[in-house]
Length: 620
Image (cartoon, rainbow, N blue to C red):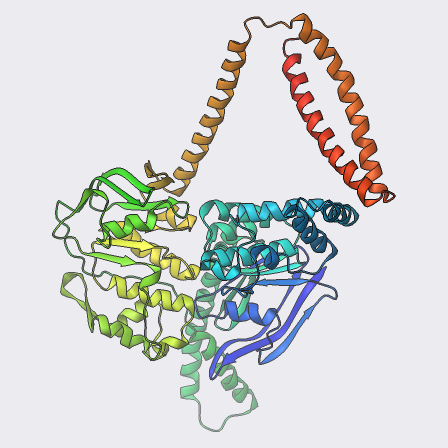
């Protein structure tokens, strides 16, 4: 069933055409990813699909009755509302019931309010919906539902906006970078949630594992044209490579034929017949094909790196605390040449503090950090990106250096360096204000690499970078001969680059795990299994110690036999109470009494079932 049809969609900014005559459709249940280079029009296309009306021409048609919700990169939340009010801003009967029930829970002395709210929850069957809301908020670590939106951090607002879309349960979710500001556990939960949901999804994301697991269709925007691939990310890469090989072969054949045709045209007299004219016209079309270029994303930058001495960076029993909170406790490590280390851990466990201590931005509370004399550090972090809006792209680079020294005594101009970093010549004199978020990040990254560091620190370098830039950046970093420290939520990026991982567990503990992100997740799983095993063994030991004989006493036998009858009676009462509450014939006072008793019955059944299971192990 078709949910969305797009026909001949065209968009330009001034003389720059972003895309033209795009035509595609999205069916019910499709999970579609749009990929393109930064500035290629991904976010622009999503906004147009949401009806912002900025397209130059074309038609966008949704199936009648379809509910669409949009998660944009910049949140659009009401700062005056609480988190709870914002995520439940949809006006549905279930939402109204849940709001009333939440109000009743915050006013426990108002029994009439509680009874009315309880009736509304039953009447609208909103209990499952309420459980879903609680699950989503919990998984996204939105704990204080009454906190005002204006008091939230940027990352918290992003999570609230995401929760709002998921809770609204639209037919089509349009998501722009949904994994930004999420930690690794949240990303994996969201990945699982979106994979299993029945909703249709159109998204832009740079998370390649996300693309691999969630999506079944890839739409690539390239050269103002849309290419469709019916498969996940691996399928897309395979078919894209095949398409480029076919294009190369077509161009090669066209070039050979063009040489023959060009020779024929040069030998012909000026007066030509109809057949000759047709051949000349065909030559024009042939020339268009032959002069095409297959763009290859290459980032071959052999920047001259300062030599590293034997002493690089050493941490000796380093600790850091703020007030009563211990972030890092007695951590020691000696960095070795060429190491590539990933840093993972929940927010607030000290990752940024650790980096700031290494870069000597803050002092440790105890211990010492020794930095070798030959170390040249460069630190890429979100707060460091400061450009003047009226600067031109090439001016940003020239402010750092006119020329970049390369190996073997060579050098590269600022313009050449920009081209290597996927900024074509026609962008060099664009103003910074014209750049997309990803293009700004790429430009900032260039200014960091131009410092010729031998100790490179990257704090979330993948945010807002397109998958093509990420690929070439990974190739560059794999060849980087200095030390590399990476904080990232990009699992693919970490898996491809790092040798081992610093896991910030919390409460000051840092665990050094040999291996990449996959090794880290394996370690967590092993720790979880070990913890469960120890808990199970502990319960078994306690049970064996508390009972010398594996037999029931006379009193326990009587209790065991009585439990079966009690459980049967409670089950009957539970069924009767449920039927009465659902009948709609009770007064508010009667409904309140029945609801309280139903809760008590449920608790008793749970307790007596646990006791029955315990005694049944020793019954003979």
